[in-house]
Amino acid sequence: MGAAEDTLRRPGRLWAVVSGVLVVVAVIVISRMQVRRVPGKPGTEPMLSVYFHEENTVRQMPLETYVEGVVAAEMDPNWPIEALKAQAIVARTFTLEKIQRGGVPARGTDASTDPKEFQAYDAAKVNDRVREAVRSTRGQVITYGGKPIQAWFHASSGGKTATPEEGLGQKMAALPYVSVVPDMPASSPQTWVQRFSASEVARAARTAGVPVGDSVSSIRIGRKGPSGRAETLVINGKAVSAPALRLALGGERMRSTLLDDVRLEDGTVYMRGRGYGHGVGMSQWGAWVMALRGKKAQDIVRYYYRGVKIETMWQ
Image (tube, rainbow, N blue to C red; front, side, top):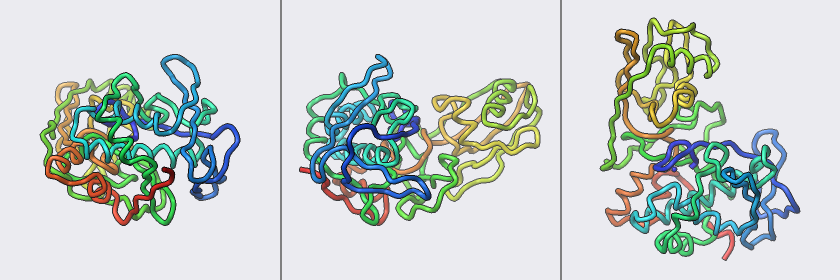
């Protein structure tokens, strides 16, 4: 779930350049990157250009309509309404911030339905609960210092959320609103076990940028981050980025980098871990638990993103 490559449905994304006539709603400056603007007039709902990867077409739609399809794809549409509301606020923020940083340059659009580029999207799954979640949070965006935040989200943290560097493998300046927080105990499977052939792990390491040979003769957990997630795995004596290896092996198999055990036996690599997804930002299963306990969407958002505000950008 958001941020895509690791959510209840699917997750993963990259982001891009805004097309069309642009007027400032809010701006974010990322190091030396050029400031981008959100389509539309200040205080009004933006119209987005969205690339539909299944059809190879581009459509125009209001941002709130787009958010409905994202919420339905990234979270079970029948979940508690406050969890759906939290997902709507997070998805809206994720969308706005990514557009301001460029949208989807490869497509020349503001957004995409391909979770590897942006967020998952499925209009066919939108129901009355999703519509109500989006309608009742209309225009609400998470901000820090007056700017929309990078609102990552994932399916299940496995007990603790992650920093961007350990969960995503991204070198970046510290973001004060994203930190390691203890997560809610969830009813989703918290532990997982997976096996890989030694040769496929070697291929994945090569895909991650570290040639280790054609097979694996040794493997162990290397450096760990603040949440206990593996930042590196040492394969044949070489350090390989754990987040990059996870993407190369497939996030549905190597479900997280919160690893309890990694070992090699008879040409097979066994991994045992906790959680599902990169672990950064809001845990969707954690949001589910908090909603069942009576917490409101705003409480959920502020738990996972510390020191933020929730501002209404348009009515």
